[in-house]
Image 1 (tube, rainbow, N blue to C red):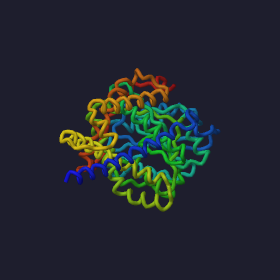
Image 2: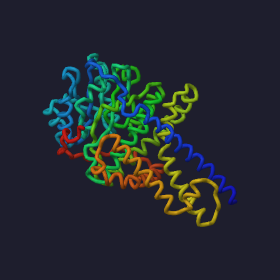
Image 3: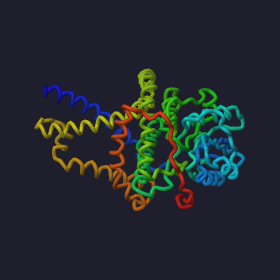
Image 4: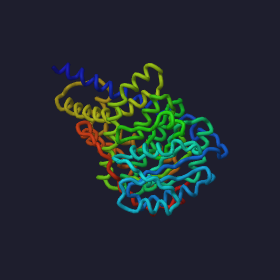
Length: 413
């Protein structure tokens, strides 16, 4: 019986190890062409339709529109559309006063994807628009954002994800951890994949799509994570998602643990839904075409399951250690050393955090609590993933945004 249990452990361990090594090895491509811009600069050419879906965002949306109005890009080449939905405040009024065009949503909106689908249908036949850019209402936008997205369009990009920075990274350990999470994704996933002709991941805000793509395929989301779902759809269609590192938007991250808990439950539930809906199709397309982006998306959608697997393997190791079951892999020996196991992995996490902070020319002092507690942030994702495996979040819940006191000039390097 013991040999059967140990064999099962080694099989599961091999799965988890191969999964981890895949991301570790592919992540190294982030170092290629270190600090080199991926797109040449071009003259303003393309016109953008900027879409902001807002639900009770009266406190923050004027600041976003203000930064969009200050783009170093011809005003004639972009138009700002705000789509209020389920609002009980003055989002529509303040957005209009700030200079946005209001699109009244006349369909039920249960999630952000519903509002985007409605808006794309409204604007897709506007022949004067070349591409759409989607922002969250809490964002601030770098003055060169549109110019850099224009560069990408000039070089043939169809879909692109921007660089997600933070406007409140120093509020507490949670906002710092969120900032590090996106810094790590920006470098070790998005930048890395650009360096081997893969696809970046669309993650909610600051992404661009050519109007011709929406004309051809439409925009339809079946999950509560329309961003991750659209990335998978692009992979199935053979559309590369480019990472435009010099196009920067600044997010407001949740300051309370409960808000973070709800948000991450939504992310995990959406991820698992995407795995169920698209996982088989993506694998089939990968084996048929060799498109690495399809395989990448399967690996991403599997992340919650793999995190839970890693957690249970740790529990099994503890049990084996107590029962005196002898194992012969490196991690078992390291784990048996007790505290050393946790120290090694914690220090590796801190080192990675410091690297991405320095790479992005930020002050470690401003994000110190995030660096120290980032491992805790990831650990709290384990119960979220376990819960979502058995009971998925079906409804989108608003995350409160109220940081209207942040000045863009404080953030721009």
